[in-house]
Amino acid sequence: MAFRRSEAPAAADTGNGVPIPVKIVIAGGFAVGKTTFVGSISEITPLTTEAAMTQVAAGIDDAGDATTKTSTTVAMDFGRISLGDDLILYLFGTPGQDRFRFMWDDLVRGAIGAVVLVDTSRLEDCFSAVDYFESNGVPFIVAVNAFHGRLHHSLDAVRSALGIPDEVPVIRTDARDRAATKLALLEVVQHALLRASS
Amino acid sequence: MSDDFDGVDRTLRVRPYALTGGRTRSANDLPIETIVKATLRGLSLTSQLTLERKRIVTMCMVPLSIAEISAHMHIPLGVARVLVGDMSAEALLETNRMPVGRLGDRPDIKLLERVLDGLQAL
Image 1 (cartoon, rainbow over the protein chains, first blue to last red):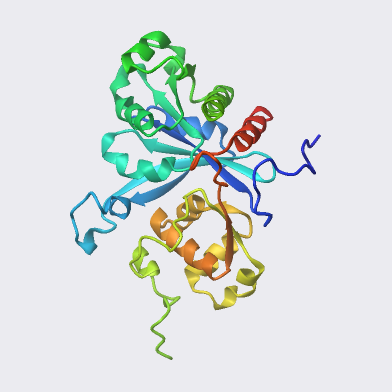
Image 2: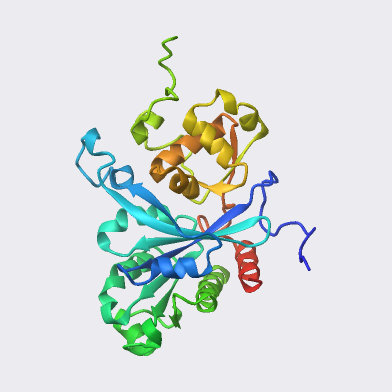
């Protein structure tokens, strides 16, 4: 029943009995369904954490006033999936707009890859996330969230509108549906594997 | 009674970054998904810890990420990161992060395969 029970873990394990974390970033515009997507498969109700803007934007922002330190925060929803005893996958939902770029470097560091969730009626909301992942070499897929089972545009039309190469998967998903979310996550891991093997 | 200025008074509510002495970075900058677990030393010292530290040690009897600690304690990520960094330096907590492979900051192939297997088995 339990496979690889006593096998040596494939990846390095520090041996202290603390699970290894991995993460996938879920990006997309406002109200595109990121938290729904995370919640459909997470073993915990999605939690919210806050990143303070000045914390990571210190070099960019010239506010230079210590009193503004916690004045701007961005909420980020996330969930988790235990994959066996010693591996935990975290899903971090992040706002896709340019003004939140300050937190992306931190978020994508070490990530398996990203799922860009898209609502075809507001395609432009995902442009900056796609730009960012492309220019930073982060493996990503585009998952078109079919609201009420309907797509306003074909997947091919989405691909050409986004101008992304053929090797980047563009799939249809339903953020409310666990099985669909699982497929989207498998897709991004497979894509990352392909990229890592080439 | 004793005026002890070097610690956070456990009865005071303080602004989040006061807990970290105003620091927004810890010595080792831990990723937000870093998994944290209380050590035996941490658990044996809980009665001597400040309120926040005690909460973190108790909470981390089961492994939790820095992001989860931040969410449960309603403190900004940066604060949770500094607290965990300090506490693990003091061996109150032990942490685990993704092993860095040949690809620099990306998971290596073996780890990706384990994630794939794990997801498929869900």
